[in-house]
Image (cartoon, rainbow, N blue to C red; front, side):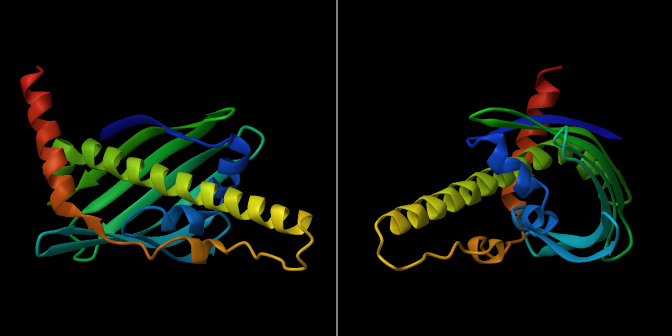
Length: 202
């Protein structure tokens, strides 16, 4: 069991950030290598995530149950996945909470459990990989929030100028670039350095 508690800021008001976090397709598209394939029931979603480690490609497929509390602006996440070869299995459970005013603080508190050939790697560097993913996710969400706000501002300015033209706000699928698989080489190096630091700090 690998515990994980991380908080990262998104430079935008919570009123703009929370609606995006409530959209599973939006969230998946902001995570490198992740793809949402289908909804398999109420609050249950299927998808996959791809890792590339040099010539090796590992694809985890699974499902996640998302339980949102809009009043508290938090969400519980229960996920399970199996790699394409069926050799490694992963379970994750997190509580995602948000807070703040002009800047939104997003906290992920939970744990990951990996069994199989990837277990040793997960224990050695899984936390550092997760931190790198969260940083990229936060950056993508911040970009989308900024683009949407700018589009609304431009649209309002256009209407106030009485040009007779309307500006359409791009849909989420148009705003987000096609997800790329996780750069395993870079994340492996970050994980290795983090593992070394943890050894020498003992």
